[in-house]
Length: 165
Image (cartoon, rainbow, N blue to C red; front, side):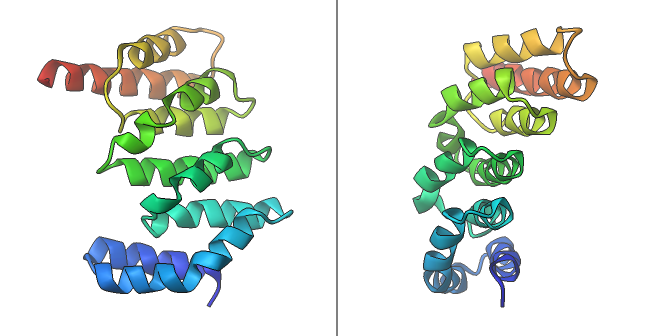
């Protein structure tokens, strides 16, 4: 079985609530994920960072942070997908890397990566500076249309969260 196949299996176990089997799978694949995350091949790194979310590996959030800083847009995107997945039930995952996400949203050279960062922010706490940043991007005529739309939508979601508090 490959790491990618194990990650798909882990995701299915997590969705089924099979915590014991998921823990066993994590134990079996921990070293391989770490090694793949250090690979010279960006494709292997991307698989490793995507696997962190599929394995629901909260203990590896520091490793995930390294993926957000990777030189490869594919790796950054995979790390963002995992962050979004991990943060669905735990806003602290996003809150812990919020400044880095703000930088990615504002300045990353890849529009798809910027959109993924915007989508990750929706699962964090509704902080004022995040809403202001997203509204600024939503109103920026020079920004990519899909990015503007995503930023506007997430800003609205965060505002609703603020009002519910």
